Length: 310
Image 1 (cartoon, one colour):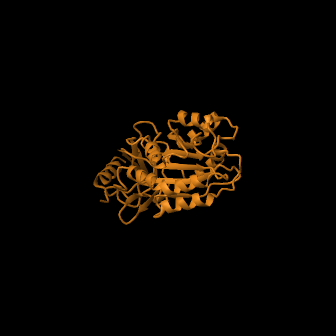
Image 2 (tube, rainbow, N blue to C red):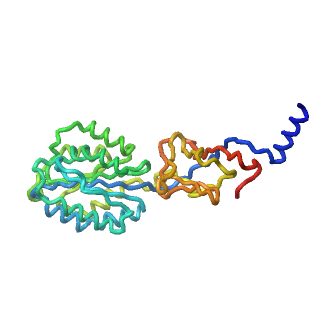
Image 3 (cartoon, rainbow, N blue to C red):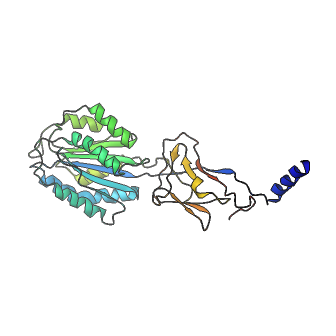
């Protein structure tokens, strides 16, 4: 019996005894500077809004230029103030003509919407749809821009709205508004509900008949520019041993990074024994400090333990 034990031990040390065991690689995330910028335009589509919609289309190039200088990762959507309508679509940096797509959505609004402007209710109604379509980002910042010449008529609980909005944006958001002013024709002289909401969220109120280019510049200057965003240290990770592919699990703290989604997850390269991450993998910024990126797997028992793939 003693001689058999010594034989087994010497076989293991020589690297010729194949057996199954597990391994976990632990990597530190790195800090970047910019997350995705999500912009929700909520635009009044009642009868008096045509000149203001035209002004948005005419000047939005300023918003795109400033936004693109801040981050290469962004998404925009357009919602009307008519609660009977759904969002008009989503465009993003993946669209080579994102600015044109946005302008097209604004032009589709028209001016035949409900005379009861309810931008806050419209926002709340569309949050689930936006969330389902992957509009919000774990590491992103959301800028809500309301454009209306009337006070909000939603008659809703503002705390409830902010709670819902903070939930999907992780509280990384602000609300800005272009509002009617007594100096603007065909508009209300006051919108205290919307003015108060912008102030609560760190945004600003601007004149609906004012300088849109300067207003776009001003609001984007308030977006955090040096936020410490945690990212992957590299897009390809070599494994030191051949794994049982079905046993591989990749996580960041409690966040599971999915297998098989090449853009937002990872795949296994069996020719080079590597984990390859998609270019849209987002780490959950709210994992506990010190969390590691962990790649766990069972070592293939059919391969000698001393074989290391480089």
